Image (cartoon, rainbow, N blue to C red):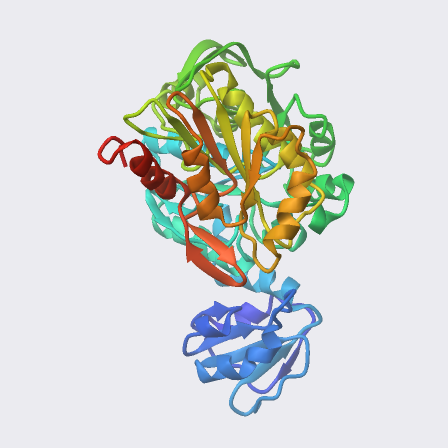
Length: 494
């Protein structure tokens, strides 16, 4: 790209040395720098990019964007000094990739729970309709059916703009994106132009980062505020009428809101809900008629997720009848109350629930079908929101037997995590096992035929973070192996 054109987007800067005529790419990780590229020094919580300028230059960087003095030869590498590199990268990334979000219908999904399910339901329905689409979030970056691994629910701004640009290159017309509160506060969505913003719910989570529910709610509201003020553009907010925070979200944008819900009046409202172990049906009242809906997703929370997706796709221009026709065909979302198929009368679910509200909803989704025991495995991450731990265990206590364990312990001792979880237990039918693999095996060991086990916290993830290292880990695989050992090999379906 033409370097002068790229850096013209920065209104206040100091250029030290001579800028090259063109640059090949941009990076915020010195290891990702290519010859002729730009390296932007970002100050993070644990790492400062300014400390890696030498490595970036060794890898071929021709321009360094910095907010501090850096020790390099300006005769060989140009330096662009700015006050705030975190803000600069948003401006630069958007221009470098040609403002790709303007070329797609962008749907952003925020809320404590349901982001992954809603965004992936939207993606699946659009694919069923024949549209080329992309979706990014906790599970990764799904580019029209090809899944790429990503680091965060909402990636850094440079990665985000690169993903959107890839979607444009692959001729996608819509992209759904999970939008985390961390990503909004830290400016990772800078330059992303959303057309539809969805709010699912707000419950206790991430208070180690936000401090209070008020600040947490404000962070979520940034998505709606950032829809902008250009009323010539066709944009919508999609709000959960049964969540009290929706009123605040609606006030943060001038664009029309479509509401959905079960209990309160809403434009998309579900009634006569029938919940079964592997299927859900309900009657849907929508602006363009009333419809009978059947789907393979389970639990009342899945009804909310389906309603949110339906309202968003209606806002996009699809008829409700077409939407629900595709909804009936899509499978459950990976790692979200995902049933592990077995040939024994032992029911196993894998879920990502790691907040009190999500745990409560996961348990209540299966309680009506419990024949004997419900066993619930609950873990929480180390060095993260500690206030929610006893509340999580309290919610899990509805199960007959609870296994308290860890999620990604990181640098926090097992005993610290388990003791804070244990404080919330309301009965004595539980075990404390810090090692998650051992905890999974223990849950299977205490299970009998006709029991239900829910493994919560990891969901789709196939790793566990201990210290600063990712180790391979799969709740489903470990559970299957343990069940084969207990009930006999060959009787479980992998």
